[in-house]
Length: 285
Ligand code: SAM
Image (cartoon, rainbow, N blue to C red; front, top):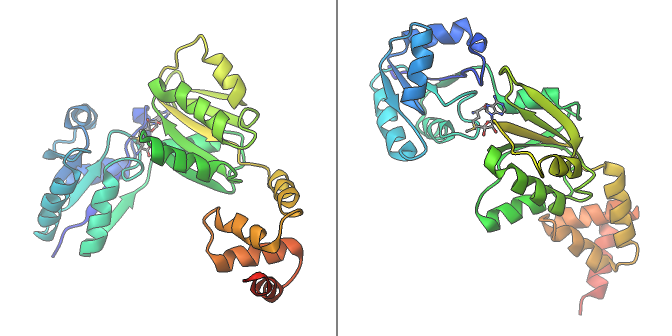
């Protein structure tokens, strides 16, 4: 019988957050795959866990996933831990879980600390609808595309960031999000640690704060989504003077297919999709 891959969430800064169930799972696993074996050894020693460990990280994630899958097929139960928090969220665990899913290997998750959810709950912003972006890409083109997608996002946005990239990211957010400077932001740093801090401010004021202060520690940025009313008013002002063709194209340019774009245009104008279709046919050369 094949073994099970067990995703074990580990503390993001406070050892008291290690759950008894996860300690037991790590003790009983045949093997622990860890992102940073040296770091994890300290954690495992603290809890008296002496299970054999192997490394699974960003630079070996694809080949090593193959090795781990073979071991799972042979019946080994493997626990996966990453540097901190919930495996598979912005870390190489994602690749292993995908491969297990493709190969029909059972995966279970033992929940626990997760930086993005901890930050969201502390942000004081809307938590009902949110979007998690992980780290914004360092690749210029990918980053621009991500920022374009976020420009008019109405859900709360969560981003991971390293301290040395924080200022640059705040600048990009100010520049690229609609009403960027005045957007509310919660900068959640050193969560669950002694110097935990949640700075609730605006993107503009956050930039001013870090003008003469170096960001320190790990950050999660939680950003207020764009107001639905503002977005609607702006869209209405845009399409009111447009032809139906341009109105449909405006939505196509946001990534919608023609059918969806026609549906949106019809809704805006309070007419049926058939009316939009007929108008487009009439305008065709
Ligand atoms: N899988 C982890 C999780 O779900 O919590 C996240 C791993 S990701 C490689 C690391 C990022 O998580 C950091 O750069 C930071 O943005 C965020 N993070 C982790 N621990 C944190 C903490 N204690 N306080 C604030 N942010 C933290």
